[in-house]
Structure formats: structure tokens, C-alpha cells
Image (cartoon, rainbow, N blue to C red; front, side):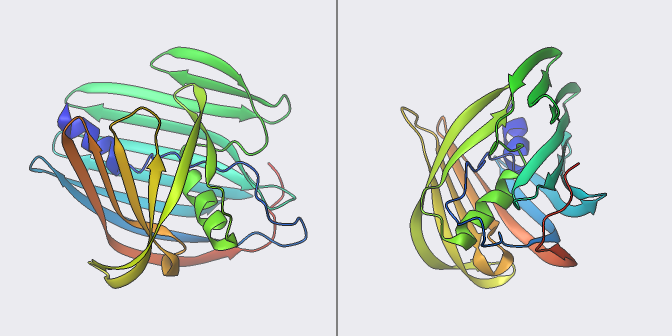
Length: 246
């Protein structure tokens, strides 16, 4: 299922969930600005397109990603809010995919009253403890961007994914000028640090776009995937002050 792997990567479910920030409590975290982005990729001759949106939703935010080609589609959605300390807090997540007639669903919901997570994947349910600093599979990109804007050195992350919490680490690999469909951009190159794995994931993030990924490359099992940002725009909604918790 090569095309299905490419769809999953294009859906930008790359987990980068931050632990605690090293910034002092009296320094506000960077504002969250809403946006719309379009991505394209080609894997083994299969063209793939995806749209990525961050919008306001009630007292919080919604991230929605849709990836599709002629073989199928994937839709991911996550709701989160900002707490009184300015931290991103996940509320719920769902992933619906339909590829070549096969349908799979995954979801999770955080019960803040009991500090617990209810996860459901392929019909199997799991109950996990929820701890401060854990985020959903999509809000990771926002927390990573805020860490980079804050100059946080230790890019160590905790990921709620597939019914468990996993650790991820990323390292800076320097800056460079990159030719993109949006023109020449100055980008920061990040690489995921993996233990005992031949999989390689590299991201190029644009500071002028609030560290939105403009290029992602992944190598796995002798195959390679690549996606590129085609268009991006801020949609005008932003907040620098904490929202009320949901």
C-alpha cells in the first residue's frame, strides 16, 4: 500500500508534541495566527494533494487536514484551547481514512476533569493518563513553531498517538535558502532523531510563515516521499492572550 503511506505522510501527522517550555511564566507565548495552506506530493507516480487549515472554534481552535488522490482520502481534525498560562491543551482528535475501499478510524478525547484520555483505534479502546504538556497529533506543529520562535534549545516531545504516548526528539541542522513555489525562502532544517531505525525524516520550516513546513522528505524501506507547500496565507485571526479553558 505505497500510495496509502504517501497519503498518511502528506496528511502531516508528523508528531512533534512539546513538553514544558523553558520560557519564564511572565513572558507570553507567541500568538497563534490562523492560516490556510495547500500541499502537493508525488510518490511512485501517484499525485497527492492536501489542504491544511487552522481556524478559531468557540473558545479554542480547530486544525483540519484533508489529503486525497484517486485511490482514497484521509481527514484529520483536532480541537484544542489555550489555558491560563498560554499553553496549548488538546480536547479531541479524529482520523478518518478510506483507501482503496478500506476504511479505518481513530479518535481520542481528553477528559480534563479526570485528567484522562479515551483513545479508540480500529475499534480497540484504551484509557490513558493525561499530563500537562501532552498534545494531540496535529497541534504538535503549533507547539513546535512556538518553541522555535521562543528559541527553546531542547526540542524533546511527547506524543499522544495510536493509543499510547511516545517520545520524539528533533535536532536543528542549520539554515539555508530554499527555492519553493512561493519563491526563495530562508528556512530552518530539522531532522528527527531516531534510535535503531533506518527511517529518516527531514523538515524545512519557514520562520516568516510562523515555521510552517514548506518541504518534508522521508525515507523508509528503500522508498522516499516528498511534499511541498504550494500556497499559504494567514487568515487574520490571532490571539496573544490566553483563551478561557474549555
